[in-house]
Length: 105
Image 1 (cartoon, rainbow, N blue to C red):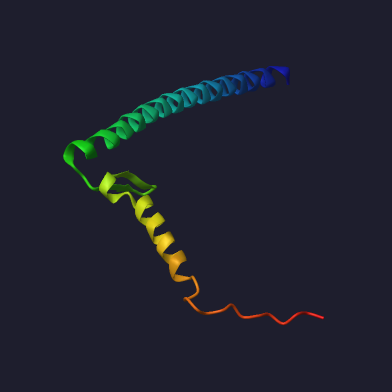
Image 2 (cartoon, helix red, strand yellow):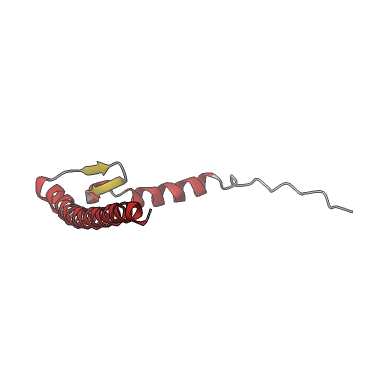
């Protein structure tokens, strides 16, 4: 009975060793892939920052939002002006009085 268990134990040890080496190999591949992806993203980001200016692009969009917008398309200035205009249009016309609210007793 002991003789039958010994080969089975050796097989299990071998299988565990193979699985451990496979895990290490996959971890190594994942680390290298992530490193390459980081490098590609960095290069792409630098290109997205420089190329639109060189090529006189107006706007560059991605799935994540605006990557580049030319200064002429800076909506912050326009939105601030619109906010001021909207606030002015909400003011009471001259000569009108605010309604008096009934006093709660």
